[in-house]
Length: 465
Image 1 (cartoon, rainbow, N blue to C red):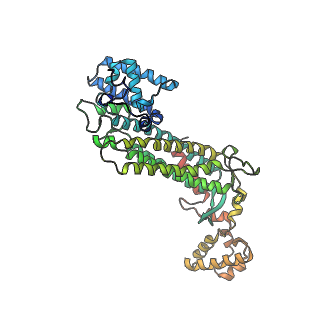
Image 2: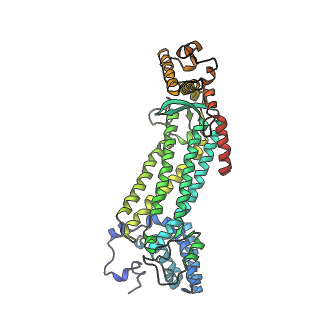
Image 3: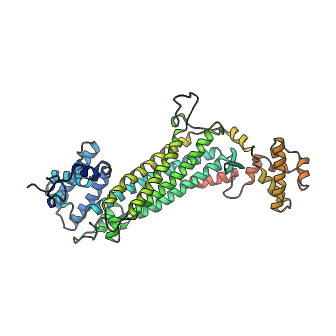
């Protein structure tokens, strides 16, 4: 009888009297998607091997052979020539089997003191840590793009909306900085999530730890972890870090979706505020005049997909007893797709935002509709001594009069305004202009151009160059 790795090359095959059914083999295998963990699996294995040698659990010669074999495997994987075998189930057994073919018994000794349970938990954490770092870079780049456009349009007046009704004048720069804040909170959430990702489970073995004198702290240092997991049962079964990442990613995609919705609206002829670069749009197969904002629309749709992945992981974990269960094989595809989708979306949006063409005239014209300076008139009357509720009532009558005659508040004569309340003076004209309105909002965080530029200067000091 050949060895267990030779007979179907499965780590437990000596126990079984018949081979795994072909459909079961396909149903339970994960190598098609978890092979993307290969680089991190090799990193973790090498750190584990060096620790085993340092603890005199394997020989220095075994370590040298393992390092030699892993270098060849890494080279083959990068070159695309590695032979991934479905019957070996996953990335771990594929690499271990190939290592044993290359270096013999030294390869068989590598798994001493560990299990696939703590091995995969380590691989996922290494992979996710790297993914978070790349997403953070993309978030920073998107925020810089938004800041650049905001700075160019710190004085560009547009209508601010509540309930999608014209509310008060704001500047486009101020509006875009709202998204800079949103994506900044996303970066904070991911940084906080990364701290909990960055704990080493290796050494927990299958669930109870191991009798070998492992130096877990050494492995943690070599792999750049902040520390080790404190409980072996939790270490192999915990997927909180993946759920937390998907939650943070879902919030980030919701922010993308809100921005997407505005870009779609603003690009429509009904608004005409912006035009997106052609490379981010498509035409119609039947209507030659169409220019469709496909990227924002698809990002809006992909948000639902990412939120769905979060739900899938929550449901996946909700009924699992300690410790590791095969259910957890289903954690990777939602996690991988979430990270891929978020990263690709952020990269696309960083370039797309930078290429937006703004129709400032259309924005300003829209701000004149809807009586956007009504609150300014009420504030003016309050400063003249009226209680705010009384001022509110006076302005409501002014708006009604304008609606009946098809005019804006700024088009009312001084006499008409004074007929509504004698406190009105000639200086009222200053507050009824769009420019005067935005200039008056000079409180920190307000839409006044000076405040927008102050916020931009602060962000420039924080964001990457």
